[in-house]
Amino acid sequence: MKADPASPAGSADTLSQQRPLGDRGFQLLALASGLLVLVILVLIAVTTSQQAASWFSTEGLKIFTNNWDPATNHFGALSFIYGTALTALIAVIIAVPVSVGIALLLTQVVPYRWSRPIVYVVDLLAVVPSVVWGLWGILVFAPWIQHIYASIASGVGGIPVLGALFGPPTSGPSFFTAGIILAFMITPIVTSLSREVIATVPQIDKEGAYALGATRWEMITGAVWPHSQGGVVGAVLLGLGRAMGETIAAALVIGSASNVITTHLFVPGYNMPAVIANQFGEASGVFRSALMGLGVLLFVFTIIINVLARGIVERSARRKRGA
Amino acid sequence: MTAVAAPQQAPDLREPKGWRRSKNRIMTVLMVIAFVLTIIPLGFVLFTVIAKGASIISWQFLTGSPIPPNVLPAGIGGMWPAVLGTLLITGLATLMTVPLGILGAIYLNEYGGRNWLAALIGFMSDVMTGVPSIVMGLFIFSIWVLHFGYSGLAGAFALGCLMLPVVIRSSYEMLRLVPDPLREASYALGATKSRVTLTVVLPAALGGIVSGALLAIARAAGETAPLLFTILTVTQANPNVFSGPNTSLPSQIFSNATQPYTGAQDRGWGAALTLIAICFILMIAARIVTARFTRYSR
Image (cartoon, rainbow over all chains, first blue to last red; front, side, top):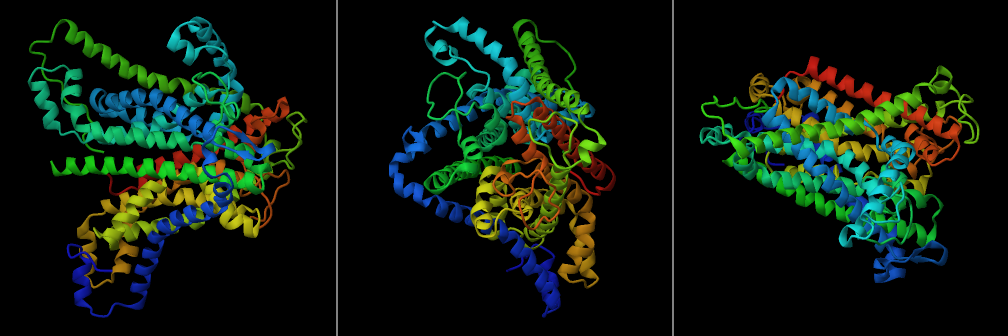
């Protein structure tokens, strides 16, 4: 390992030619701990893919059909992929305006001594465990919102697009309920990331906007937004990744219905993490391998989204530092 | 955090009139509404859990064993097996992960500097925080459970995989804040790098590192998905964390949530309140550590 010449290590190295064994051992230990992250990620990919191999080989491209029937050994997972995308999308559509709104409120509107309690409250959303959201979702929230769904559905029944999205049939546990619960759960992370990005907007840009006579909102759209656009997009992508992988809350409130691909949002369905959580226990053979394969797909999707999002966030942070 | 303070409003030489002013006000109100929208579900959840859980929780509920069959009403048996399982498994995961995470962060900040390997590890550990918890469960199932069977240890491995990147990231942020002159002064006294790191840098950053670790533990304690296929659920307390199926509060809540019996649901609410209490205690502890022992902060 070559020491960074800018760090004090370089000078220490040249002073004493031979470093004590313990010193080198410690460096190796630290390096090994760092490498553990890469090792785990590679092992995840390898071992789960091995377990999933028989699904990929027996079904081939049929894994992307809409036909999931363990009783007859059919494992087409399209409906789960659709459900994952749909619920994550609903969650993001609900959570992003709220999160960005709170981030702007925190950074541009309220004084510092008020912003800390607000941050605490938003972070509390993240402290509530997923399974508690699920318990509340299935026993309290779903039965309550069912009536709202029913009245919305009867209201928009005949209207072309709205009817296809929000029309009957309706059910408490559904894609939309899962989307709402997921939105609660991703709000803290999207808020805190957006807040970090927005806080890097140079004070002088904002003062410039005010000096030109802008209102606060005009200052936000003119000075804050262009500066933090990229970072907020990254934050949104990270939220999307979280929503895709969130398991237990979705498993409890999504309704657990296989092979549902529909435009109707108020019907029970399934997403990938939920089907793994609910069916893995009694699965064996190709069935288990198929569920493992869903895990592999989920892993790949979330890794791609996270790499993209982190890349975007880091690039916009670097540009900010350079400026 | 810098620059969180709201900018000083420019003096109202000529306040904009009409639509511009209205739009500004509407948008400000919408931002406040966004915050209110998050308070409502949070308050609703906490209220429900406390209202339904408080009447269930008693000394007997927390320490009684075994967990009774679902058909039985609340008040018989207790959640001790789950409480014990959560404490043991989360504790074991903490013992394994926190030292490794801190060491990893030490590599990134003290040894890696700006080289490509440290950059890659830092980036991938950020990416790893986004890996779904259920995937960690499947991973430990295929690499450990298939060969050695279900055990609390397997659950601890799965939780550890979730905690590791979080601990690395938070420790790294804290190490980065330790000012360089501290290191330079120790080098000037002839200390080796490991000695400087262990006796000067680490103690200086310890407050923040502990607080970050506590938050990671709080997150892990509430996780269910990684435990589903690694510890299963049992009704008898299993104090041997290294062998045999175990159970945990989140696993019990998950299995009770789908039961039609009110007794099972009541126990679910009681367990939920216990779990939330554990998570909140950890979070408050983290805040206290941050407030009292953090020497350098952003």
